[in-house]
Length: 211
Ligand code: 5GP
Image (cartoon, rainbow, N blue to C red):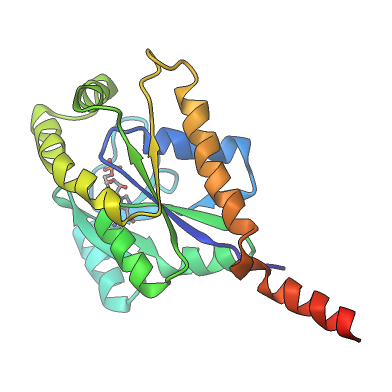
């Protein structure tokens, strides 16, 4: 079995990354997503172990000290981390795994593994992003202000990613979500047929032809 590949999806809060990933998993069960640990409080409707493993500051400190994280970062005044065990297990099972993490996490992942494929999800405009954040109804005014303030710096980081996907406003493009989902899936499929993923196959084929 071929080992899976690792994909990072980042983008400013409220771009609909979560929505894109959720829909992608529903449509394409050959892809998995890693559930991160976070010290932030659950939002209404979030379930421990589904959206995140919600942990205390002390538990997070312990996981850091144990070296349990593949990467971790401070984001918007909380801490978030990807567990090494989740990454290893999914990739070993041949699953293509998505890490929905911030730009710092992406940098850390890319330093550890130069084969990580990074995808940046962008809003079409500032107005659209602000509308989405407010529409979500889960953020305080303070949190919206912090997240918008971080946005310019975050968009600058897109230049370091491999792919950029613009999640259009569904008022303008009714199929915006499906388009974004299929663009992400196209990147995943392209990776599967990349030469680096086919090296063993090509070696076997040429060896058998030379017999
Ligand atoms: P939220 O609190 O809105 O769910 O997520 C806030 C930000 O934290 C998002 O940009 C999300 O991608 C990022 N994030 C979630 N999990 C992780 C993680 O495990 N590591 C890092 N570095 N960032 C994460």
